[in-house]
Image (cartoon, rainbow, N blue to C red; front, side):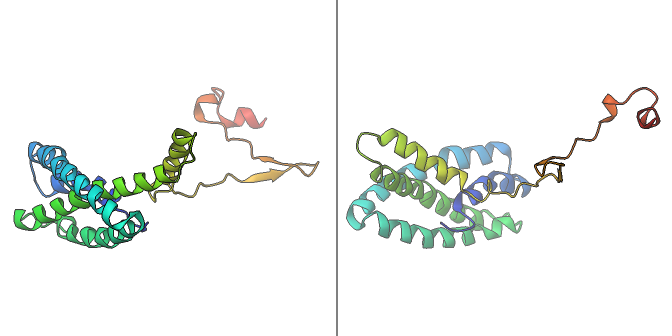
Length: 174
């Protein structure tokens, strides 16, 4: 999938709409009611298209459409608050967001081994979820100090203020 996935764009829709001044009621209705209905209709269409063109072609097509849809939401990210510019981008997001999930889940289920479908599907979906860019972060390692035996161990933690004696650091040094 692409580096910037549609899921990241979808997650930012609500904060962007609030930032341009939409009332919370309108944001909730647009994203949770109207958007879900558009997405539901799109999923049924995606099922028909998957049967006709196949999973692989649909996934490739979805990647290209996803890039175009992310671009359609850019005016919203730039602070444009004209409804004529915002609603088409939102409709396009919902037209492809749920179908992409349908295509991905269809591929995962079809790759599951007979007899262990649940386990295989769960493992694939977990890897897919964990591989998303928002979760892929570098973890900072703590410095390690060598010991006399050549083994490495973590550096001792610094004492916090709560664990210091009432006399402060001077009492600990002497």
